[in-house]
Length: 198
Image (cartoon, rainbow, N blue to C red):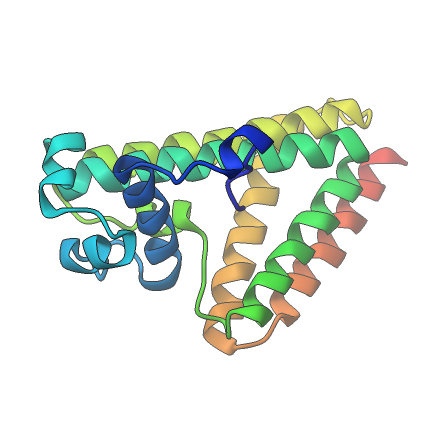
């Protein structure tokens, strides 16, 4: 989910903090957390070396956690825009198809930054906590969409299942270099939702 830019922001170059966050999100999607190094982040963002410790005194872990929270805010905004346009079936189909397009246009070398953050290693609790919060945000959006669509019984657990199914399908799609797992997940989730409405 790309950061939305208002007309007022369009003519303003992002500062070093935002450039570092944007670069971290992109690199987490492409490489994961462990392969996202500070030197590469600096090069990609065009920020000076002292910018990292000026804006993120705790170093890479703090930057990656901030990037995960930013990616989560983008995700929530995306889900909000989908919810404004349609019911939960629409949300699921548009979300999975967005990922299909992302994978196909990036040669399967992109993934979910929340998942990358969740795989951070021991001692990187702030990153994993940010990932946990990001997944909770996705689940809350889907639960709200389910309730808006008249599915109230078991909405919370169903929302969790939807997130798990899509995230798992995304990993399978990356590994297989095929969007079929995402298409399968979309089809089965929509059928599950329709069965709950009967």
